[in-house]
Length: 195
Image (cartoon, rainbow, N blue to C red; front, top):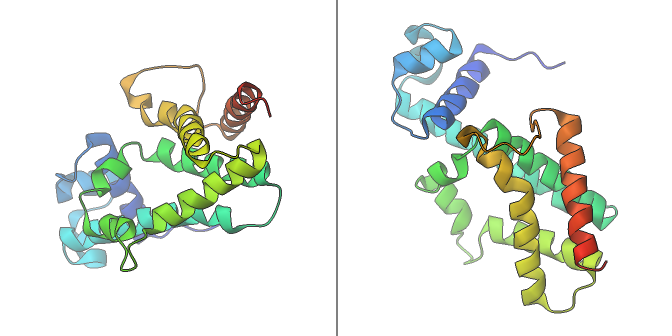
């Protein structure tokens, strides 16, 4: 088991606090309280709140890239796509709304707008859609994109709106329930696509 450092605890607490408040407008005292450290610890590890927030962005983007990295693995397309959805749902459950908040920030915008005109996210979403096409054998790419978006929304959206008290009877924090939900939606969707 990995030992979590104080610095990592502060980063994690900050990320959760940003998510809870749906805002980057947080105080150092709030962060210290959430991390159960004193303000001096934050200054010691990060020098400034701005530096801390920058590292939080890096942490979230690293987590996002970790999830996307699953799409580079070898294996059965359905297994890879299910594993990817599992990771995405895990991050969306831990940090609902972070994608929207980070959309305003530089690092996330760099991921969306790369030097080559194709974003990192677009590349990986294309990989996910390619896997979906292999699973469903849908020849019309536009139809496949639309259906993939519907599938992805069906899987990810419920965990992102949990804090709105819209219950579907699934505890996304429970790994088994998360896997079962993804499989159930995925299989139902494939039946509807006549796969």
